[in-house]
Image (tube, rainbow, N blue to C red; front, top):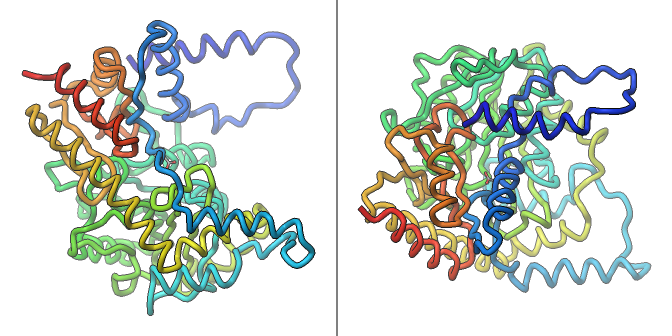
Length: 427
Ligand code: MLT
């Protein structure tokens, strides 16, 4: 159970708490975090399972980590850039903190044609890092809303920054965060009419973990909601390349007026296999302003200049190669591969009689266990099949009763996993 896991965590830490102490007071906001970050926590449980079952052939469909090799056209560009560093002509030191202009322009032209210019876009080492830097920029006096369930980094960084109150064990929510339930009953789109105003609204589409992607009409409602409330929308489009539903926009800037309220963050991780390489970007339109009229862009530029020295020059060469015709074709092939995994996994659970969501416009299948506690389901799956998934409640209280199955995996592992699921859950 959750309290037992928290206690186990604390107990293992207690050993390390003995001995000499400094006079430095611990950051009390970090102390508010009720558990370790979700994925390392799952890794710890996987390690315990392996210690108990040393022969287990674990398959991980837990963290959404890419498994397929980076297409040649992309890795060659990185390798050339890397070798170039050994020559006077190819050497470069610090680059622009916001990234190389040709890459920024190519990103704008590829993903935001006629909507966003390259100079409004910051290239970075990934969306997760940008989310933390955005939070640093917002400061701790803002209020925050998140989809429930949602990618844990939004809530955890809000807690670390001091934007929230204590964790409330009675409803497993942090105080002062507006949780917007996204459930099958509301088509995974929040009931905005009953959502309180907050300064910042985090929204991810296609959603991690539910796999739901918002339609144009829903995003128009979201932008209108933020505009009415004078809120800033942080729109996470890390999985947008997976969208196939033509009613679902691939960027928030397809919505009229979005530039006045929305920051968008996106990533090469899930489309080019860059989870280890690290490259992403964030768009801060010139039209987005604070209440005193100050452009948010200026402050993010200041934060990036102070906290970041630019993405690796070698990796940016890879990013540019991703956006060449050949690179784009290779990325779409990779995405199609993971989407096929998703189709196979979704079908497996559907055939077993589970209700499933997502898995079409996103690389995650959201499997309903009809209200059973998701840690219990996660443990049952792990014990019966040696397969690591992700318990839905790890993404927020409304995720309880669900398990997320990631479609990032080698094909042979996905096929083996399906066989194991069928054996363990046949009715
Ligand atoms: C996930 O599994 O939710 C993601 O891989 C985590 C991430 O992108 O940081």
